[in-house]
Amino acid sequence: MEADDLARRSAIESLLFGLLGVGVLGVVAGLVPPIGICLADYLDNSSLAFKICYLFTVLAPTMVVAVFAIVVPLFCGGTLVKRLMLTSLTLVPGCVATGIGIRLMLASPGEPIAVPVAYGILGLLFGCGTAVLIMQLMTPWTLTHSPFDGKKANPLGLQTLLEFTTLIGIACGLVALPTAEEFCLAIFLMAVVGVVVSIIAVRLLVAFLDEAPERRWVEIGLLVLSGMAVSTTLTCLIVRQEAGWTIGASEIAMIVLPSMYGALMLYLPAALVIGWLSRCGWRCVDRRRATASPT
Image (cartoon, rainbow, N blue to C red; front, side, top):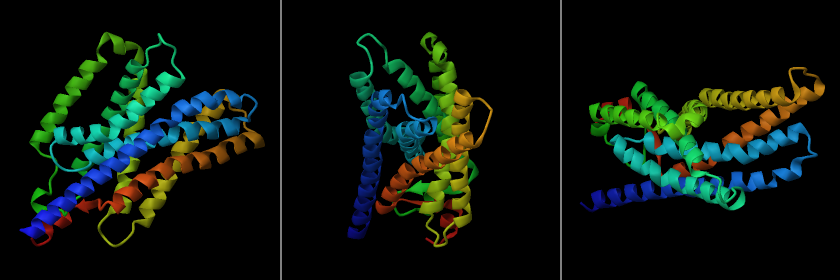
């Protein structure tokens, strides 16, 4: 009995400390964009490559931590309502920090900030949630913070799917509001970003938190290349907007160096989140192995 109580207490501590760490990282990352935008006026005489690197520094960590704040609770087991409640604990503090920072540093007294930020978060949440639940349905992997119970191997059931359908209806209703018309494109883009980045985030969690002893070096290499591809695509779009398609030696430098730096800015916060979860005892488990193992 004492062993069960100790295991239950350890599981609760692992859950709280893991989510608390992600939430604190979200607050720190959430303050970066307002500060970075305030300092952007000093970049007028800087090169385009430096401006792109600065843009990655300001926006990439916040986006990555926000995605992990959504992915980590949703990739666990349990009902969808429970997962969304845990998501609010990790995501809301960073959103509040960003909103307060924008209000204090950037916004004029009569300028509305809450509405566009809220719709952007809605798009990101919808994209990440959809990708995570589909991946959990199609793959055998689940993120857990406690000793895994084979009897609870399947985290997706009819109740979860019904809850997900209901939430999709609510999200579509919010998007259909008159105030959302001017933000439809932003909501769609944030949802697409959420899908792409959350797929990479889930695969990173599986690669580094797998309970199996072998390390998935091939998959890790592919994930690094995926991050590089995302960074290069964003860099090319910015260079295309600023310099056109005429590419010389200087333009190649403007693409290669910022792309490498952008990939670093994408994976550094991811490494912090995954490292913290690992120290708190979180891991990804293969439901097939857990179900097949003797109890």
